[in-house]
Length: 143
Image (tube, rainbow, N blue to C red; front, side, top):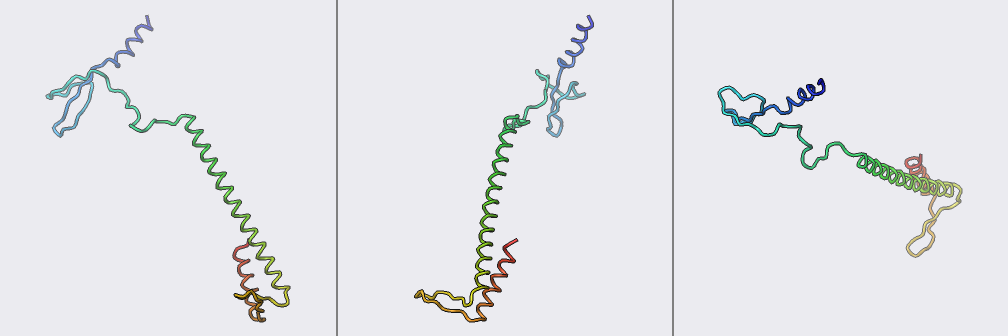
């Protein structure tokens, strides 16, 4: 008998009457009691919590979360691979610059090739400027 009474107590609020009316400002209101001195309509179904907004599905499912996680992981792996390639390229460029600097310091005479492919030897002042420039580049770019 207690279960039967409890059922009717719980069912009672669900079947309560709902009224709808518009105030003097044109705003629509809903309530369980009709307003005093106003015309109200009876609403057939009781209002429930609204569903998600159009275009939104509420909480993402675990599949959506998994896809998002995998996407972030792939992006992170791609960024890491790109950074590794960049670090390798920088390391190779630094090693080449250090090798050229060591060669420039050990060479008796440095030269460059002109338009005809002939050697044009640098003077002592040009050699020092070239070495200083290489040292500056290495200190800026190599860590």
